[in-house]
Length: 178
Image 1 (cartoon, rainbow, N blue to C red):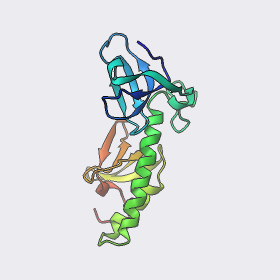
Image 2 (cartoon, rainbow, N blue to C red):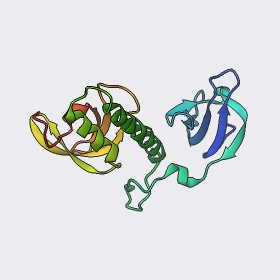
Image 3 (spheres, rainbow, N blue to C red):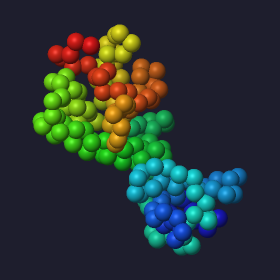
Image 4 (tube, rainbow, N blue to C red):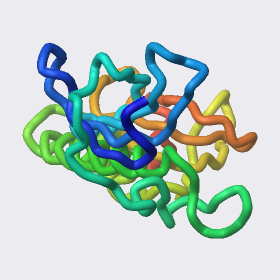
């Protein structure tokens, strides 16, 4: 294994161009022994020596792996790996929510849909909000807006703490008769 945790490396010349931060090393997986987060997409991949360039191009600091937006399991205030990716997903989703809201001004969309996109554009990760789910109004915890897709447009946690993708129509709005 040529790289260590937090190394920034590029993909090999014969692969799609990308830049990865190595966030985990797994010697038990010799072919794809690294977990790398793409700086291009924010997605985590399993990558190996064959798919990476020969030398590192830089080094990330520990703050890349943590975020104050979600508390850690030990209560220290910094969350483990995944928060940086979650923050990236949140930012991409916020851009989408703002774009959808702007498009609402020119289309023939319902007032309820406009209110729902306004709600999504204003939420931050961890914010509670009301949804109409299974015939009842429930409180979910917002995580992020999906960057693309129209069937499921946001990710939230239900009361049990399980994350799912949900459609726009379950967001409770004042004037909606759902």
